[in-house]
Length: 99
Image 1: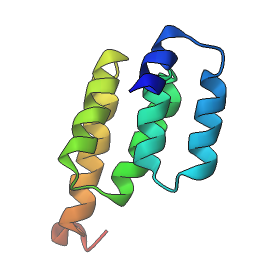
Image 2: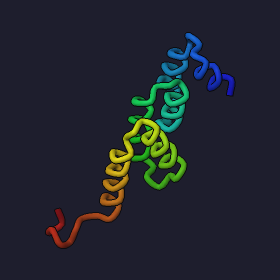
Image 3: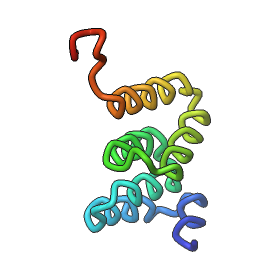
């Protein structure tokens, strides 16, 4: 929690914290959270999307991504992303010949 508070306070080592998370963590979810805490909203949104592609059933990830996108005023982009995930889960459309 100290790292989160320090990042929000704008301490100069915040970039180092992000670099360390990128280098040491195989979890895109963890990276997304660090980026969001550090105020790197665009990079956090991209990391959340990557994490959701790997774990599309994660309600926690979906909520975090949707909340961040709402804060950025990009709700429609988030809706389109979730619609694409739903289509992917549903499989090919039989009426369109499987395309």
